[in-house]
Image 1 (cartoon, one colour):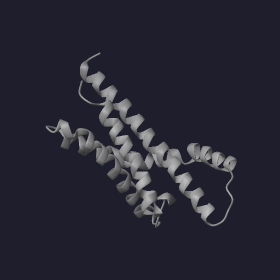
Image 2 (spheres, one colour):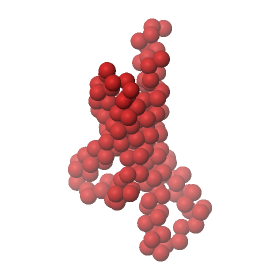
Image 3 (cartoon, one colour):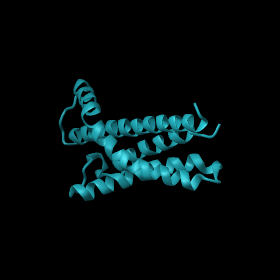
Image 4 (cartoon, one colour):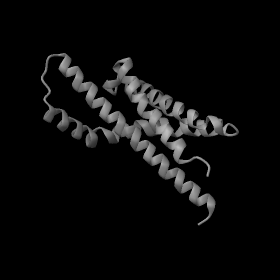
Length: 150
């Protein structure tokens, strides 16, 4: 197998895992913020219901959120890759920042396209949005580490 082919496979696998990290993190955050909102309204959410809701959102919401993340991460990582050329010492920081910015941009764009104030309810508050962006940052960090030049 040629070195370029191995490199492409390694980068593709790292991207898919980074996308999964971002989507799963976001789905978990979304569920917990929604449940916390219900509890603030005085609704009792026992642990079994919390776990069942989390599991349900993992298989029901994660695929949709993964598409939103995909739309953001592809151009953000391409830009980070371009900016990192010649600045290898800043590569991890660039990808981490790109991942966070990708989630923000993707959610902002999705809201504009959907004509809704907020498509992903956790993004209604600054803390919720920051939590979703943290998933993007983690995905960017993971991708940078896994694709570091050997």
